[in-house]
Length: 125
Image 1: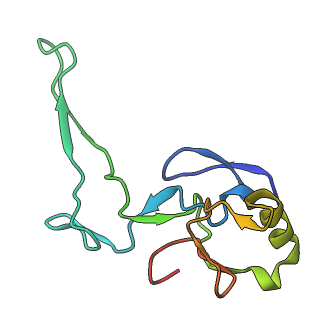
Image 2: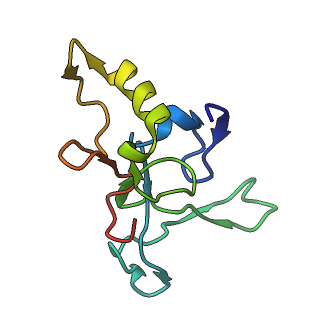
């Protein structure tokens, strides 16, 4: 479960176990419209034009996707995790993030009252 993977969105290499609930990446939660941009935040692809050797080559258009607007874990899995149903993961996270029964606050996706570890702050999971 602790294998390393590469996130397609942010290109970061991450550990599967350490990624859960960290919300270190960002995603768009709605579709893209060419006129409006992403429907979740209205961000558009910026169009960058550059010319290489202007005297002999045409300009090239490069579109870079804007950073997502919603914090999430790296990767594609964003369903919340119920730690009460995952004792192995709970034990791992407890050993890593609690010192002398004090939580270090480094899992922004954690709802301590329900023991649910959210993998995205989007309403759709």
